[in-house]
Image (cartoon, rainbow, N blue to C red; front, top):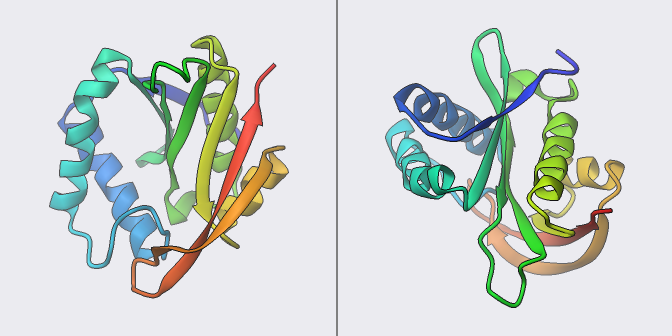
Length: 173
């Protein structure tokens, strides 16, 4: 599965929303602290993705996905819309990889594709946050992201209990 191609979605139809909802639910059920608590229904997850459709279609948010033979297994967003004093910056958000595709290079491919997409959009600085000590944090460090700092008790794990969040940045050449 290493080297799965990453593609950009410019519109979100029902098939894409359904597959993205499955990835989100799987990640939350697997313990990922990505803004949702357990239990997370497919319907609620689908509503999240439907809520992003306008920003994706308008180009305010780049939505990248990786597919395997069963469908979408990973996704990441590049949030281009920033305050007017930060036109050079974008946020990386909701980097999700289905548990069936973990540790196979999908996350790294998504991060590289997000960096390339941000660069192509004229961005020179990327920022993100992730649960401290998570697999995602280790991935970002391996990909060359710089740690900015950690905030204790920033969010909740999906099953409950506080978790710290670490912020990272990457300057693009």
